[in-house]
Length: 340
Image 1: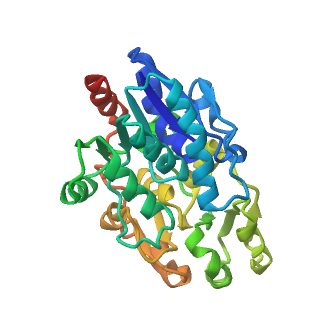
Image 2: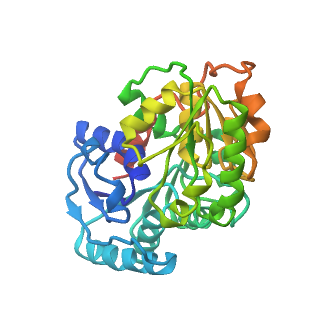
Image 3: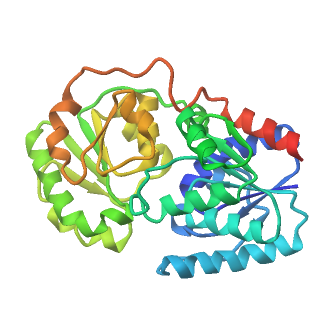
């Protein structure tokens, strides 16, 4: 029996193609929702069957250490009573790290989906860079989304390394949203390592908006109070702050935008899928493929300096998506089924 753990919206988005493929092929599995981000769960929960096990581990307001401890405690009780032959986690969340460590302590093999992403800076992104390194070291199976991730894992001595592609391409293909161009710019800023610099970033967003008065900057703002408290700094008349969007609604915005300004990792992948340029509001990225294909550039805290680049038409959507061909879930399930 495979136990699939998830606790956040990004995990569900990248895991649901795998779960549907497991279901289609009747591979025994159970889905476990930890409840890490219960407030950002409802809009994507219909993508996969209802969880077989629903844990009450809402970590809102808790420190990273207490969040990790709470999830470990809940997961321990599940694994103690289960007959799990394998645990599958995705990405670099607190849920993924806590589940992987819990399973490792109980000698249950761990499979890591989207393994091998590295920024080479433990503070950027924090704590994700540390989480993903821990998971890859204890995992029995590491499913790398790209060649560069595969090479990193091999160099680190990770076990069971396979290139599968990134299931985000499978997920986006499922939604079948058509790309077009409108007079809007999608903005998202939320990463923990940027919280102390949001005043600089938001003031620079005003500069960016003034450079392009004919464009509408749409900012679905994260509910985190550490982000919301700087909302008043966004004074440019063509910046529209809106509530967090459901995933289908967010894809509609991305598909129609002129370009993106964001510190999100997932948006760097989605930008490539839709052929949109993205100004990455970070010092480093663990997704170099977006930069290498010409659709992304690092801006640190000053996105305005890359506005001219974002508006230019010098790059088009790559013929071959560096993140995969939409058959990643099929490859992952082949590997899981062979193991069990």
